[in-house]
Length: 152
Length: 214
Image 1 (cartoon, rainbow over the protein chains, first blue to last red):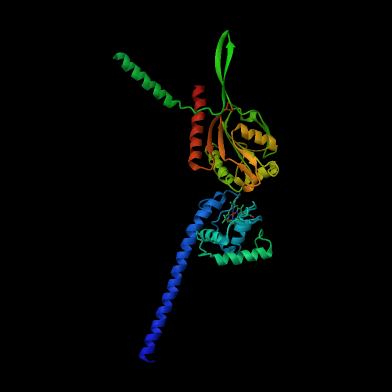
Image 2 (image 1 turned 120 degrees about the vertical axis):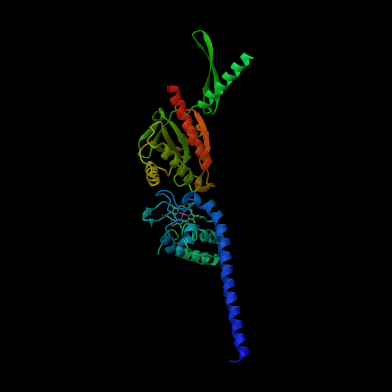
């Protein structure tokens, strides 16, 4: 290997690292933006039932603090928010079966904001849930035409 | 000079006595009625009161205004499938219940404005899931007509409206009623500060009765 090509390789490596780092930085910024937007949507649309700290209310409204449960239904979250839910669930070792109303007016983007907030607040660590992910999941629940049931 | 000093002192004493026996205002319509008593004409103020009622509660038992005769109570209007303000109202009424748990002079009366869906059985499940036991907090079911007429008496707006979230347009007031069934306060049941104020006012109202007894 000549000295020149060695310099070239180093240069390329440096560029690639920069790009990857930059991307990650951008991802972080995007997540922070989604999280902040989601927070105000959450307090307008979800907080009355699920509580400011995601604590829920008695055995009426489930908490959003059961991190294992929330993680296990990541692919259903968008459908739940958009179409509501009426099914027996076991969350935080308790059974819930009150109906959650639908939010048909929320856009995919708004749902992504809310889910990035919920997915990274209350002890959850799901990372960014972007608009594309929401749109894909929403297509699936529409196709199954049974948004009102969770299957894991 | 002496006269002024004693006047000032009595004024101070009066002010102190007022402070000690703070009273809540009486709200609603009032009417001055003059009547003859022993040949003298006396003018009395008649205040708006909550008329008598009979509803069915979460245990499918009749609940009447008589059940509230010896207690002050907080009344509100809600429905179990309400997606908007009711969950917050219920959470706040739980705070009130917890503070006065076991106090037979304090009750809570929640009227469902959704008479079709909120049968006593549905109300029972709602109360259970909230963790409400006993009969201090009554959830009542009545005909649409009776409940809406009652809402009017408490000066709370409630109406069926397909456009509103959950199908009903209503206000989240908590109304404080005294033992004479007069309206003594109205508080926004979705606002933490106002709910704290309600509980302070309930203490004042309760002390009105214990002071009057002395």
